[in-house]
Image (cartoon, rainbow, N blue to C red):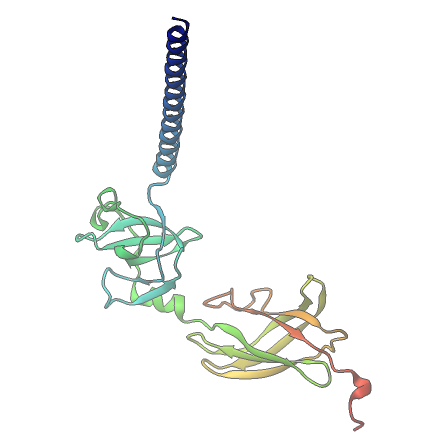
Amino acid sequence: MKNKITQYISIIILMLTFIWLFSTYQLFNDNKTIEESHKTKVSDATMNNNETAFSLAFTANLRTDPSIESNLVAILPGETLINIIAKDPLEEWFYVSRIDSGSIGGWVQAIHVAKCNCAKNIPFAETIEIPFNSEQSIKEKISKPDLIIYESSILQSNKILITLGNIGESSLINQAFGIKLSKISGEIIGIIEFGPDDIIKNKYTTFIVPIELVESGLHIIHIDYLNEIDEINEENNTTSQVYVINQKDNLPNE
């Protein structure tokens, strides 16, 4: 009799334990579902506050019209943040503007826009006023020089020889700009002026920075550091390089 009572008590304890474990598991899942639901609502609310803001899945051509035959406005790298303003009648092209530069607008193919099932929410171009990019306005935008530092090297005099190039759509004629030489720490070694001189479109010219380096290390050269020249791209005017100075005691006597 005593053994049966003990067995009944053991069974009851096991059943109560099972019920407790099941209830705890159910409560945990309910809380998790509520939390995920809340996250989804927050995410949806965030998207709804900025429904037309997206990024490009990969590099895309920005064009004047919704056609691959139209003029090229710019090449936008992948992950560029854009606002979608309008769509074409076939919903295959979006008229967009860059979020970081709202003045640059044009058409990109819809397939270039990342994670966007948004065509139905975008107005047709015919129903809203969008900027008109004429061929003349495009020419005005891109008919500028674009200065770059093609290469640089240190001379035996410990001065730096730089090769300047112009990869833009127009030549730089009889103009001057500043060149800043600094250490990687930000300490400015010197500022000098280039020109007035010419840098012809698709040509290169060499220039010696008239400053002797006194120690080896990583240095930065920034041409047109005050943005005095109106260029297509202002973000390709710097180069960084390690220069190893020549010990003058070891140089041959001239």
